[in-house]
Image 1 (cartoon, rainbow, N blue to C red):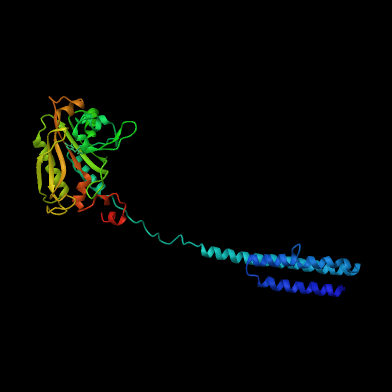
Image 2 (cartoon, rainbow, N blue to C red):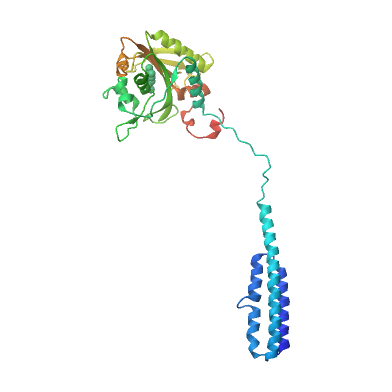
Length: 344
Ligand code: DAH
């Protein structure tokens, strides 16, 4: 290969590489140009292989040219690479730009669950009447949930409160009434307390029954507490709850832990007494079972029934919330549908 041929080829390669270098608009494309020109198997490497055939002085000249071209290409590639990298960086900065001074979209205010609202309102009412607010375990012993409330194992009242049993013999409480005994044991009389909380039943779920719902237990034990006291507090309670006239009826009701026992029903506020699924088409809703504390229960709580007497009630909080807000399906409360919850 004559030397001017070699020099010619090198100059052409130089020019061609510079042209493709200018055309490369991405770092990847640029790398391809570098590999093609300067790589181990690149064009310049190929040319230098043919050096062996050149005369020594020609080889020196061509070699020098080759080096100059190599250095020039390396230098330009590096420059171009810097330029492309900074363009890429700018593009990324632009796309990831956030305006930290922009006003925040704002917190969307939530609201308390309707049952919580009703519960808190009643807590305020009873605190104002001198009642303490108490809490009891949701996992109860058979003793507190049944036996000490005068419901022995063979009593038919147990069938009405089928529950979920744990392997260790404890159970999910079927009502808030066990807190009556815990309160008596812990504080003794005189005592005025309420105990709102979650209770459980092994129930078929429908529009008016849930396996999990809320009650509010109340109890007052003092000297000479009578049905008159009970009625006074129940009336105060109902007018505070409904802020309007509600029709109520009192009928005898049987609960082993009260004697006498009553059912305080209110006329269904969903249908106005005409009959609907919530009131089981009777026009009335059982809302407030109550009575005078059975002497047996006082005794279980370590209280002498000769000295003390009391009343108790078990308000269905969930049912109350249904009546209050006109909710016709109990399943909506735990359904997690925000469209429902946002209404309160
Ligand atoms: N614990 C009863 C239930 O869940 C309700 C009840 C009835 C509570 C009468 C009371 C009461 O305190 O006196 O069915």
